[in-house]
Amino acid sequence: MNFNALSPSTKSIKSQQLATFGASEPFNDTKVIGVINTNNYSDAVTQVIAGVRSAGGVAKEFKLPELGTLNRTSPLTAHFAESFTALSERNLIALVKTNSLDGVVIISECDPTVLGLLLGCLRTNCPVFVVPQSETGFYKMLEGLDLVIKEFAPPILAAAFKTGFQVVERATKTHSPKRFLTKQALISHRACIASMKMAERLVLANDVKLGDDWFLSKEKGIVQVRGSACEDGGFVQIQDNYPVQFNNQAWVYRTLEDADRGIAQIKQGVVVLQNCEGVDVSIIADAIVEKGLEDKVALVTDGYCKPSKVLTVTHCRGSGFLFIQTGDALEIDLAKGRFNTGVLAKDMKAREKRGEIFTKELMF
Image (cartoon, rainbow, N blue to C red):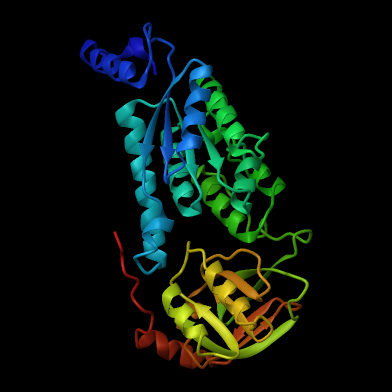
């Protein structure tokens, strides 16, 4: 905060605010850090605040909701997830502006929520660190993008304290997230498909262009499949037990709740989860494994999924994917990179004319 540049009235208000945050005069170089807590991680918050104070800054905790909590009472769809990510972004922007924050520390375990908060930091050029609650693929990607401290390791409380200390240094040097969200950093730290697509949103928001093939990785076994069922392509992170080819009929669902109920009734086929862009559908893959159907059932979705024993195609794009109906014959061929439907092209066009793309509900 450039305290001396403020008007007398604003300076008076900010002086009272800084005193409330725990700062002492003179306020000229005091860095104000917002600690965004989306769950009940009080111990981690305490350590972050202690780290901030040890570096000469002041910190204030702000509690925000996370998508994972709301999903317990609401069906999760693409618009629900996207709207919540946008809501998190707007909340972060408002907090930074109204509290004149010089930096932010995010404490959360919900990937879409963290994504929205990071987009808000990007929009406001606000220095930021994330304190991960577990070493998931997304947090590994954030570490590669320098948004998680490199020394992160259990116990988390030690990492939280160090994060609080270092965010003050980043705020002092005005290191906004823009300088870290580069194409090279993204490519150099490939992880699972889900985490890379999350990080891709941040890099693209930083006006960095990515080629269509940046995503593919022989080392990680990531291949693309495309065809009449998915014109713009979907991605597969190949596991040792995956068949090279999988042919079966489609079982189409549009929410996680419907899919979870439907799996109890099917013995084989391809579970097609539509309208789930930006949604973690791993719970459905886990349900298939729990029922011992991983050799008889595949999963395809426009959402994302952690690596699983179930043959899974994620991030499916193209209008053809939205036209798939229960009973359609589907073919997934990993060797040839194909994902086709047995429905004739003229019948697909007829479905489009009849308006059989289901309207996505806007949840916010």
